[in-house]
Image (cartoon, rainbow over all chains, first blue to last red):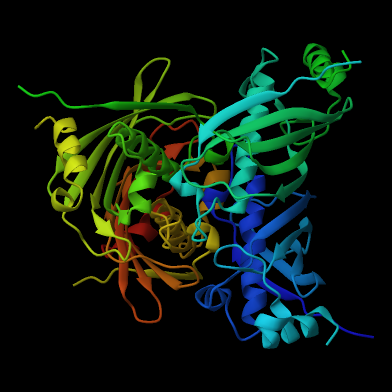
Amino acid sequence: MNSYTVHTSRFHVRYSETDQMGIVYHANYLPWFEVGRTDFLRGAGVTYRQLEEQGFLLPVTDATLSYKQPARYDDEIEVRTRIGELTPVRLTFAYEIVRAYDEELLVTGETKHVFTSKSLKPVRLSRSLPELYAWLEAAYGKG
Amino acid sequence: MNSYTVHTSRFHVRYSETDQMGIVYHANYLPWFEVGRTDFLRGAGVTYRQLEEQGFLLPVTDATLSYKQPARYDDEIEVRTRIGELTPVRLTFAYEIVRAYDEELLVTGETKHVFTSKSLKPVRLSRSLPELYAWLEAAYGKG
Amino acid sequence: MNSYTVHTSRFHVRYSETDQMGIVYHANYLPWFEVGRTDFLRGAGVTYRQLEEQGFLLPVTDATLSYKQPARYDDEIEVRTRIGELTPVRLTFAYEIVRAYDEELLVTGETKHVFTSKSLKPVRLSRSLPELYAWLEAAYGKG
Amino acid sequence: MNSYTVHTSRFHVRYSETDQMGIVYHANYLPWFEVGRTDFLRGAGVTYRQLEEQGFLLPVTDATLSYKQPARYDDEIEVRTRIGELTPVRLTFAYEIVRAYDEELLVTGETKHVFTSKSLKPVRLSRSLPELYAWLEAAYGKG
């Protein structure tokens, strides 16, 4: 039996993230997913910023969001991020957004990514960055 | 054979909508979807703003996005909006985002909604607002 | 007596631009200013996008905003943009944001800019792009 | 000689906050200012969220920003917030935004606010919420 890595990020909802319904505007969960995967990758000992500086990008090809309960201004939020799928050319992150104080599940979702060069051409991560790829495999529970 | 209504909204990509990849940040297509459905509903002779003033909300319960090609700063964009599904309590909008000058398809997606009161309790639109519901049915191609 | 150029941009307030106060979030007027200056420059026969492609940037060094009345969701907005100051190395835009239907003044402000290269080094516009500089002088009412 | 309170907030720059210049989009410092003042007020033992729930708002009437150096993706940021001016009906916050690792000053600015009721009518804070007002006076260095 393998275990997989879940990374938890925490922050408060900003006023700028609310809308006139009095709740967080539905688009604003996607930047929170991105905070989640940035923090997740930090665990690999290489930041996403460094990956970009080395000439790699991780553009989003698909996103799905399911809204259960609204987040509200100043709520403390937990983003729980894990790898949902991994191949040498593609990577899916899965997310749970939870209100910290009562662990109420607010939003679930996924983002699918391809590994590309700076000019958005696909690259094979297992060949270009074998150490990062091995770390991702381990985090996915296949290590 | 029934026909259905497609509404087209047009605008230019704003600088604020780009990210350091040099393309539109992936979350920013959701506000464009919302521009699309606001304009779509305007065709019903009642604005979404008026619906809210009458005590109705249309919160998003699910969203999916599929990114084909990136939009770039100052591109003229077309959002093509239609109804993807309609029941007395739920409504799905389907969107195509297209670059205007060459009709290249950039992003497709859907947003699912429920009709609710101001306190986010579900309401049956066919009963609460029968005229709007009839208009939506016609626009969906079932009229 | 010289005249100066005022460019007017028009659009509707997006739902995503509101906050839980029920009005437009105060930061969101800065992207509207940027829509105003993008449209203003279009009159020069060269888009800001083309300027960037030629290696020039126009970063903001200072911004001021004065909020008179709030804009609300779906209001039609007019951004009136003119040049507030021009030197060979600096450019200030001045803006008025007005509600279209009753011309109520909502927000006034300014953004100060420097002309720079892609690496953010200052450049002298009158030397690097003399035709654009001449157009700006004319638009400023000094032509 | 009186001392005044400075509150420091810390977070990382999000990818969504960058633009195609490769730096943080200039409007995105205003939500950071708002994070700063939210955290500042937390020190008073009453959150801004609670103030709103009690029927008070603190809308922005003026904002100024001066951009010294750009913030970049994933930089750790410090927002240093203090009171710049205080009267029974008005409150000014002053901010310094600093890159954490080398304390480089990136942006300075101010936001001016009025105390209002939910319907945006001005209120006299010293009368409506005397305890909060006394706390603000002390934080301003006049206590």
